[in-house]
Image 1 (cartoon, helix red, strand yellow):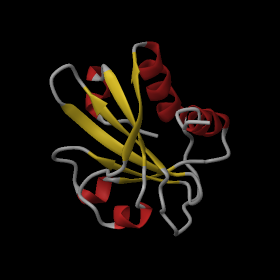
Image 2 (cartoon, rainbow, N blue to C red; image 1 turned 45 degrees about the vertical axis):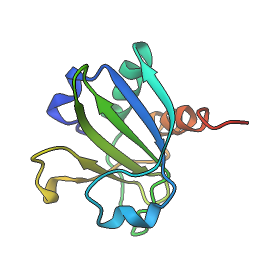
Image 3 (tube, one colour; image 1 turned 90 degrees about the vertical axis):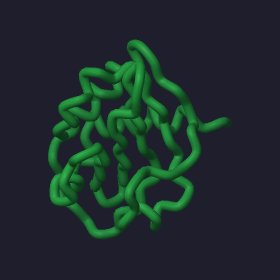
Length: 125
């Protein structure tokens, strides 16, 4: 999956557990509860996994359960919501046209499974 051009500025990632997935069909931003903060190597690994996500066939539900907010040292850079059921992702970035916000990924691929495992590990037992 193609990451926003600003991804190289990312120093911190908020992992977001999405509480109202239906909202994201037409929302202007990512909403949910912060489940974890990733820094350093965790940021680099997460961005690598996202960049490695192969394209997939899109289904129709788009009910994302997880997302990220990428931050530089001074500002929020972009947000991405992931639906591992329909293989869809939505990117929000300042100035990004609506037609470039939607992406697909193969949710059964090794990078997607590892990313979902990393997200899931943020939940309390």
